[in-house]
Length: 133
Image (cartoon, rainbow, N blue to C red):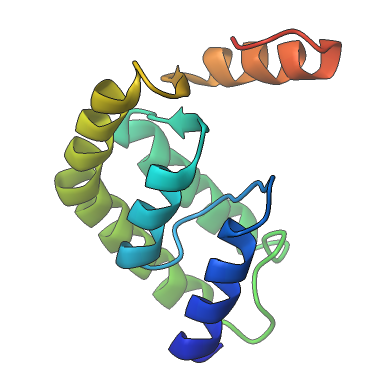
């Protein structure tokens, strides 16, 4: 999607009274989104877990295409790219995200999930209608 289309659509979504977004988008839009949000669910998992998940996806992908993997997208090149992005995010973005979460904890509802067990507990609470982890 062209950058101007993405930016316009992003603005339209943020102008709504309620919205839910997942993912990164662009560097500019993620910070805009985080600033506008009243609730943050931050998955802050160990680097080794992200690297394991990339590795596991690659191993399984040799036998069965990974779920959601684009057709005709090379598995090896995509995996190597994923390793690179996981490392770069860990090195540069994770410290910024952690600082933002600490800064915003007084003015936003923040769920800082640091393990798969935290995620499972959070999702179980959401399914039960309970707040938070």
